[in-house]
Image (cartoon, rainbow, N blue to C red):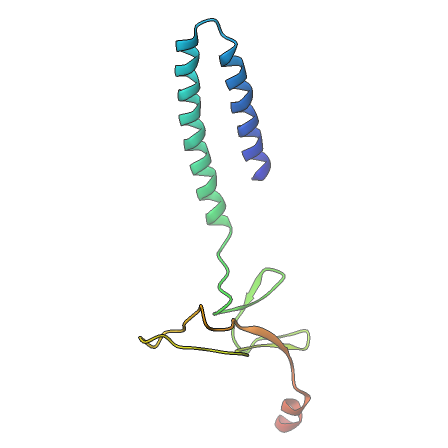
Amino acid sequence: MKKMIFAVAALVTSSFAFAQSASAPDAAQQMTQTQLAMLHQDLQQVAGELSAHQPSQDPFSFCYFKNEAYSLGSVRDGLVCEEAGIHMTASDGSLDRKRSDPLRWIPVSPKAHRGNG
């Protein structure tokens, strides 16, 4: 997608340079404004597609490993996703994300396995 954005920007830049070299400045200026409006629409569409393809990550709800989300309590490669650190609540009872630590991967405790077995 980044290549497409750069290609569109290069096209507009080259078109702009060509338009400036034209003999009729008013026609070139109007053409450039039209091209910029079209570029703006194209960039908005590309940005929308990018945001649709890239889910936002929420480190307060999931642990991440290689961009894959794992829920609280998940175990992977000897690590468990846990709430570790400070967790503050807001006045309405929700998690205060500014003053809280996100979920994180913690090594699985060998004691936990001995207690279950």
